[in-house]
Length: 425
Image (cartoon, rainbow, N blue to C red; front, side):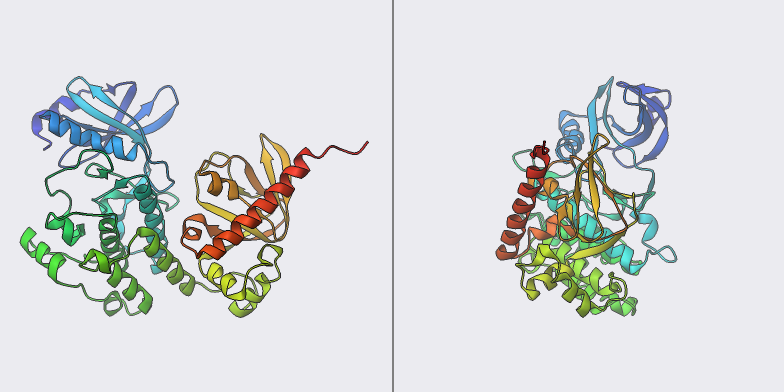
């Protein structure tokens, strides 16, 4: 589909589509125009993507985005609300993200800090791994398809050429050549780690300010993607640690079998790299002392020092001020927490239903059940919290996962017994 002049002219006088009112144009590409709109019933802004397909096949391709992204619910993926047909137009209504695409941060002097770039890469890795588990391969991961909101949270958008398990597969080679994997460019069979390659290209550009596989035309780009390796990031930015060279070399491997098997695997290494770039998060404690401190936390009584060290490398230590909100009911997230100092309170509909102290966990129900948060958690005192990504826990060795689930069960039993305990007469 190509946006032609007649299409643009017909859109000019349009002030509503379906139930949505149209406010202004946000942008346009080769296939569609995106407007800022408003949902009059829910009273929220929406982004409305519109196109006028010239055939049933093109219509099917346009709605591929609604079918693929519509089955996903993740904090780092733009939410699709609705899709339909209005007169001769097709439209998709989705979450409006106030911010810029990553394109704005891929050149000097606008580069983000290495730490922020890695954090974005980690968030995108988690989101893509989630999509893959739901049977969706994006196939067009690039800076222009990642929005960074006002709080610098990345959100993946444009699933227009995604491959859905059990759905129609596009036969044509489509995408943006500089971010396509070798197997995608040559029309070979693809797997989930085609998105690993594309994510590697995005992260490379965020870190060094230039494309890993740039070129003046399609043949030159294709030759580089299929046959050449880009310069190591540290040769362009000497302040980058060697581990980043290793991560990107593996993500950008030409053969899929030499690449990270999944975005989850890549995310784990990004988390390790981030840990190496941070100062120790526990105040006035050196890393060795921090690990020794964790061994005295009741939750880790059954863990070996080596297991605690593995978890420490794949987690964050957060401070929470008294009465600050840590978890909000209804949020979708894949993290849970262990209290290292202080207490937190769990609230439901404004009522305190439990308090959690040192060595206890909270937030684990969202991980176990795979649902949105069912309660709000606030700091009852100033707290120190260990925040663990459930996505990365899934990658941990079996014995560690078993210990977690055993502790989860124990704390849940204790918590429920307190809730249902009859008061003494």
